[in-house]
Length: 133
Image 1 (cartoon, rainbow, N blue to C red):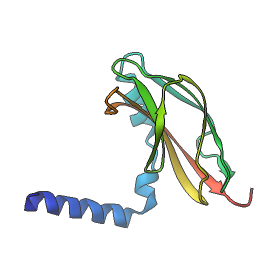
Image 2 (image 1 turned 135 degrees about the vertical axis):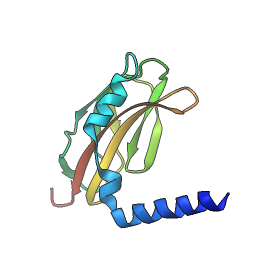
Image 3 (image 1 turned 45 degrees about the vertical axis):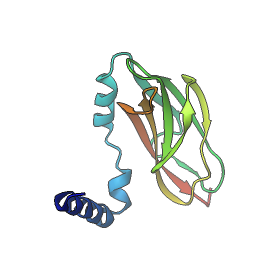
């Protein structure tokens, strides 16, 4: 690794550290809609929970979805914060989310090619896991 690359990585790490969870959990809906529109035939709909929903912390929750991978897409993964879930090929269904710790979380569906490389389309929601529910 060159010195320039090392400096860039350290700088990025510093920016992420001072930004806190807000940086990582921001959902840019317009950018995500553009990413879906850019791939012919792609569509991602998170049926539930709704963006901004409060769900019970510490218990399994359900994510209802409808996904059309579009051109170049083979399947998708559900991401919870920075953790990638297993491959999913069913275009409509319900995915069991892991037990969420209290606080804010970002749940994303990201379409990938057969080799698991991202094809671009993604859709995210932000939820709050609340132990008092």
